[in-house]
Image (cartoon, rainbow, N blue to C red; front, side, top):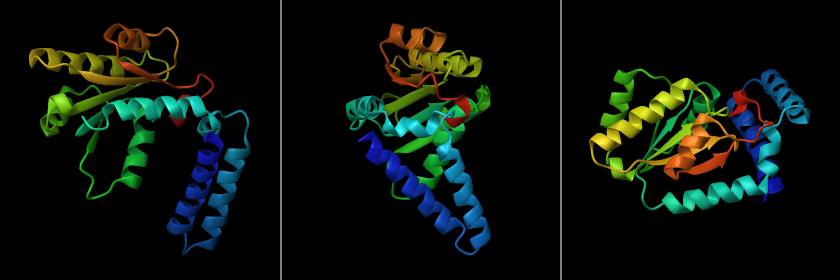
Length: 193
């Protein structure tokens, strides 16, 4: 499965490059060359992640648990923990998509409250708190904000935590609250989340 996904990701990346740069053959060739060089590097762990079947199986299991109950998702993370998922969402978002994904990438309470106001149903919202290290203060503060909102509204927070599977504040919080934890491999550098 992982090897197939890895090949499909490469083919899809090349396809996107073909579409984006179809009118500029020189830029297309440079982009494909740059992609090939990055994928050939063994010191970067991110392009090997698609080959890790156990990660895909866990993602599928967690997604299956929430698929029918979620109308909105809020992804909370700083830097690559938010930018990567946001970029993918913007590329693949469909105008007919019923579920919405919102991104909180800072601790600005005004922006946080704006995001809350957009949510259709707190009980049908899943929060995804992402921090490779599990100690990103902004992500931890946002998790506390969300938890407070749910307590004030007498609702139960549904969350998934994406972090390294090792002792860290976010991992410990997820375990304490019995939230699903999706692993960020330790060899993966944070910029590629």
